Length: 221
Image 1: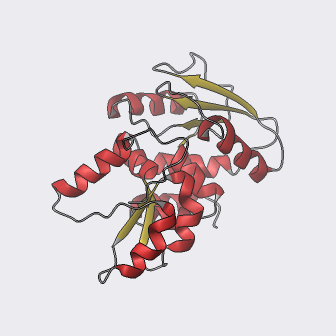
Image 2: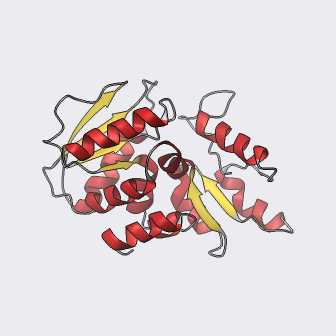
């Protein structure tokens, strides 16, 4: 497990997706090693038995992908949550839709909780910057926080959702259903970040059905 300790990390604790992932590993009698992103390469070199899977915070995806040998599977906490709380196949379709955006399109960024924003916030700064760079022009971003999506969704070209760690699966599926009813694709942070960094194919490899869906609808990377 790769857990960056930066300005966005809460002081003195891990965030909920990291804690729940670690607990699930223990519940299945597996072994986990937790490192920061700058300690991954040494940790892998020191292990006599290489891990089957590396799970990283999405914001460290690019560095972790470079430091993780190709024969070791790689994904992110947010991608795990896309599957745990919603539908990873639908999120893969949403990544493909992100690749079809055009400058000027409306994009809704939805976060299920309210939290203290820091410099370089993932939802308000990094993802918009990366996405605009990808499509080659500005987009019209709108943000919503809390338990309700806007009443009218049909004007959006894409909904980018957080990992949904603070809402249950039923609520996340309801949001996905509402978006689908309005004809708006949905993608979550981790799936989109992997796509924007050119590593979605690798990040979906542990999940064959989602990978198959991505290959059917996505842009090959």
